[in-house]
Image 1 (cartoon, rainbow, N blue to C red):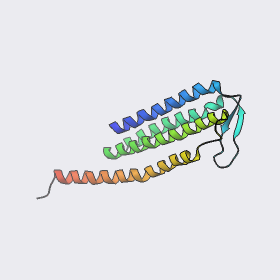
Image 2 (cartoon, one colour):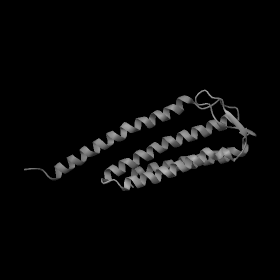
Image 3 (tube, rainbow, N blue to C red):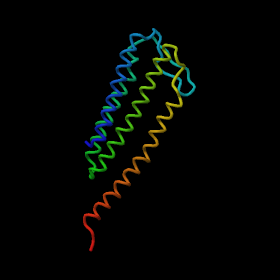
Length: 162
C-alpha cells in the first residue's frame, strides 16, 4: 500500500479506537433511560432502558470500516493500473474517515442527550460531513485525470519521437 493510504488507515483505526473508548467509558455512567435514536428530520428522540443496544452504533461503525477496507483492497487488486488502485484506496480510506466522524458525532450526541446536556446532533456539523464526502467524488475524478495525464507525459518524455 502507498504511504498515504497507510496513513489514512492508521487515522481510521485511531478514530475507531477513540470511539470505542468513549462508548466503553461513558456506558456505565449513563442514566437508566438513554436515547437509541435522535431526531434527524424532526422526529422525536427514541428513549429506552439502558441496555447493550447502546453499543449498536459502535459495532456498526467498526463493521462498516472492516467491510469497506476489505472491499477496497479487493477492488484495487483487480485494477490494471497500480496508480489507479492507489488513488482508489486513498479515496475510500479518506471517505471512511468522514464516515467515522459521522458515527462518532451521533454517538457523542446520544451520550449528551442521555445526560441532558444537548438536545440532539449539531445538524450543521453533521450535514457538513456529508457535504465533504460528496465533494470527495469530484476530487477523486480529478486525481484520476491528473494521474492519467502525468502517465502520458512520463511516457512521452521517456520515448521522445525524433
